[in-house]
Length: 419
Image (cartoon, rainbow, N blue to C red):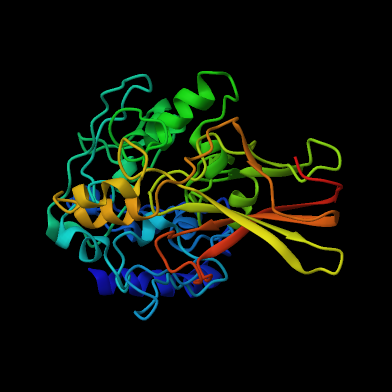
């Protein structure tokens, strides 16, 4: 199945170039899709009718997904790369179970412990958006993991029907039964996999709860996850069928691998609050994300790097802060390292606590203010500050290939004396 999946993935571009010349009026009678494998059904099965949607899912077509080399073991080992034969990369959902995905998370962490329910779920009912005890989907058998996150993972209901946002009851010749489910358009669609446990501010894998508690409930915005991560376009959902053109979500899920999405999340301001003094305020403001930044995996980190240069452009002072999710329900801290050795998840816990303490994630709408008084003499200086997103903060700090600069700011300051 893996070989077949790769063949379709890398051969579809040529197929699309040759085959997208059909007219909107063309109607095709197609056999019902083979859903006998349920959520392990190959996404190419759906892609034969939903061509544009499949192209986005499998290739990131129309997005700016960019997969740099990522270190998962050490910089000496082969980097994790996600190749594609188009200028962008496939979505993380499509690549979750794709060979030749060179490194599998369970082979790197926790001695092969299986923890990938969200990447290989069985069909589930979409939970109520206010339900605190949403649980999680049941995992597929290990021999059915090859397809990763398939179209059926989200769209197949437990009773074997295909769910979608639109009513198609009046359209004939559809090859499968479709039920209308308004929840598909809401953040509830994402709740099962993008939250882990009850709400703990600062903890990893809390994205849905961060959105609900910090963004939606206080009234910072009414957007759902799909409004940012699945921007809409006007088109048919299935090119060969007599369905209307309407607003359809692009199946891209732009996030940590999207420079555009990253650059819109945080703003950065440098302030000299006291005239002629060396005091500095660094404001990191979450103005563009409907959840904490960074969010999701505790591997994700954002570095704030600040350099003070003199009139000749020479560095005279510098400082760095790390913003990252906690591994567990408490701040990462070196004081727990000995205790960590006794844990069943020792590898992950030690990695996180070795970097603690650090700044917690910046919550939706938050203005995080960091104070710093650099040791400088009387004179005129330029303060250069930048924010960098790191896909794996456990790398050697000098490894830059999986980092993206997302914002920067500068300020000229005059110092007449110390506080």
